[in-house]
Length: 340
Image (cartoon, rainbow, N blue to C red; front, side, top):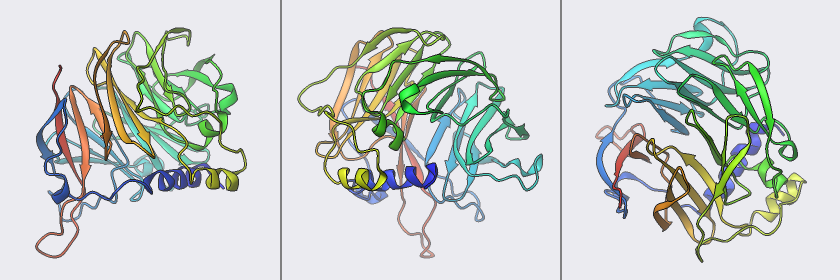
């Protein structure tokens, strides 16, 4: 069973306890520290079809990169939802396989797209979406990648979780250096789950994995500077790893395993946002300063944000059937962070 199949099964297992949400059910959601400021719809073209919004990235101008794994496409939009480009390697590498899993902005200079096609793990594009070429052959598609303000790419999760490495790469994905990270407590869970996150802000690296509730603050050479978390009775720390055998792992995940970090975002240039998932207690988020001071939290929600950047968070919604009885593309509700 390949890595992509495992990721899909993991998502399905977690989603079992999460209700389906349509636009009419969540208009608007109420949060203690976020207020809705608008909705971005992607319906300006009759030919545009988005299967699902799996992952997004946002640049400083509010442009959106959307990764649609179902449709095997990466789409570039302006801040209003107008399509600017469809990113595909066929313009410079005809017939090369393309199964995108994530796309990230390299400041205003380039775009890097991860792919799950073996041997074709990534592609580089211009900031406007033009194909530049295949990633360097040393690129091995880390689980998490981010690009710092200087255009240097960092990744974690390409190898076995018991030998976790922070990888520094150039804009083409060429490996420049690797630095060992502290060992994980639950390597099998680390291997099976795709949750966690990585932020490279040019000064520090912030990393969180699924098997711990700590956020690691590292220097660019992987040296631990600090680690922080703020837990209360809502959190259920995992107390054992899941089985290494796949079938046994699936059976074990039928029962609540504990609170896990789902993702990690740079909410503003001074704060990071951590989202948690718990089969018993729902979804939660916390906002920390980059020095580890907790400034906001909300626990026991029903659905997670999809992304957060530039002081706003994005929540995916599915609109109702339109007047023709067709199902429109998913949309994004935009929520502004209200600092306490």
